[in-house]
Image (cartoon, rainbow, N blue to C red; front, side, top):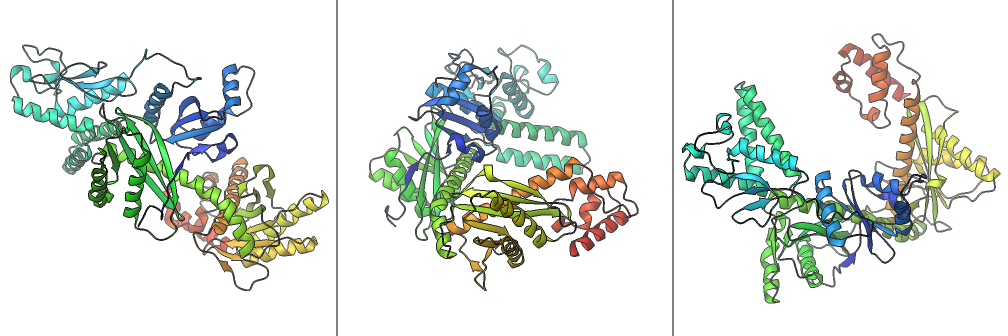
Length: 609
C-alpha cells in the first residue's frame, strides 16, 4: 500500500462548540476552554465532564463572579481529554495549567507541589520515604501523587508487602516496625543484604507499574487461604490486593522523570479510523493530538498503523524518543524502525510493556472513540441526507425529520415520544411528549395512530411547517397506522418506518422493505432518530411511573402485597427488561417461588393480549 490510499488529516477532535455541550460524554477528564483564536483561556477537571461544563452555561445568579461571566462570553470552543479516573484528571489538570498558564486559572506559583515516593537506593539497606526533593542524590522517585495521604498509603503498602525500613538512620536495636512485622530488621542483622535488596527490587517493580504478576500471585494466595478456612489471612491479602489496585489507579498519567514518548491509540468504525496520540513530556502528560482518515478499500490494520506512524513522525515536535503502540501490533516494529533508521530518525517504535503504559494507550483509545463519533455525525449529516432522498425517492431533501416511538408496560402509563432532527442533528426545542389517552391495553399501532394524529392536527390548525420526513419506530403495521392518521387529517407527508431487528425500512409505495448496508450514512441518520425517540419515550415513561402508584394488575394474586408490588414496579416494569423477563429474575429479588410463578404467568398472559 502507499500513503495516498489512507491520507491522514490532522484533526482537533474532542472539541465541542458551546451549543454542542449536550454531546459531551459523562466521563471524568480535563477540559480546555478556548477563544476564537484557539488560545486556552481556562483549564479545569471534572468527575463528570458534561455536568461540569454545562454548569458554566446555565443562567447565572447575581452572586456569580464577574470573571466567570467574562470567561463564558469569550469561549468559542471546548477541548476535552477523557481520563480513566479523577486522580488522573487532577494531575493532568496541573500539568496543563503549568504548560499553558491560562489567563483565568489561579496561579499558585508552585507554592504547592505534589509528593513522591522516594527510595534511597545508594544506601546498603535502602529506605522508603515521602519525597519532595527530586534532585536529592542517591534516590529514585515515583509519582507524583495527588496527596501526601496517598503517598503514605503506598508506603504502608510497600512496608506490608516487602517489609522495607522507613527510619532515617538505622537504630542499634529493633524498633516497633520489626515487632509488628513491618520491617525485616536489617539493623539487627536478621536479613542478608542480598535478600533485602531482592525485596527492594520487587518494591520498585510495583512502583513502576509491573503489578500483573504480583496481583496474580496474591490472588492465588488469597484463594488458598480461603480454601483452608484461614479467613483472617485471606482478608489481609484481599486488603493488599485492593491497595495495589488503588495504587495502580493513580499511576496512569505519570512516567519516570525525563521520559518523552507518544502513546498511540486508535478506533475505527464505518469506514473511518481515528488515531489519538497522548503526549508525555518529561514524564508528564501534556496533551493529545488527533488524526483521522477514510478507508476507501479494505486494508490490513497493521499496514494502516505502520503508515500512520510514518506520516505522524513527519509532523511530530521531534521531542519524543519513542512511539508506543499496543502489544498486539508487535509485528510492525521491525519494518517501521528500519524505515526510521534509514531516514536518519532517532525515534523508535516499541510496544507497551507495563500496566501503566497500557493504561495510557487505553485512555488514548477512549478519546479516539469519542472523536470518531463526532466525525461520523458530521459526515453522515451531509452525505446521509442526500442518500436518503435518493434511496427513498423523496420529493425533497429531508432536512427536518420527526420520529415517533411508544413506551408502555402492559398498557400502563403508555406514552409516545416525538423527536425532531434538523440537518441530521437533534432539535430539542421541537421535542414533544404525549400521554396516550385512547388505549389502556397494549396496542402499539393504535397508540402510534393517536400520537401522529394529535401532532399533525395541531400543526395543521396552527398553520405551522410540516417535517420533510416522518420516521415511525416499528414495521409495516406501525407504518400503516401512521398513514391512516394522516389520511384522516387529509395531510400528505413522506412517512417510513424502521424495524429494529433487521433494520428494514418500510415505505408506503414499495412491497418489499429497503435494506441498507450497515455502513450507510443514510441508515445511520435514521438509526440516530429512532434511538433518540426510544430514549426520550423511556425517560418520560419512567418519570410518570415513578410519580405515583402504578395501577396494580396484581391485586388479585395471592401473596402479592404492597411491598412486592413496589419491587415489581421498581425493578421489572421497564420497557426493555420485561421483554426478556425470566422467573429466576423475580426469585432473585426475594420473592418466593410460588408467588413469583403467579406474577410471571400474569405478565406473560398480558403480553400476549
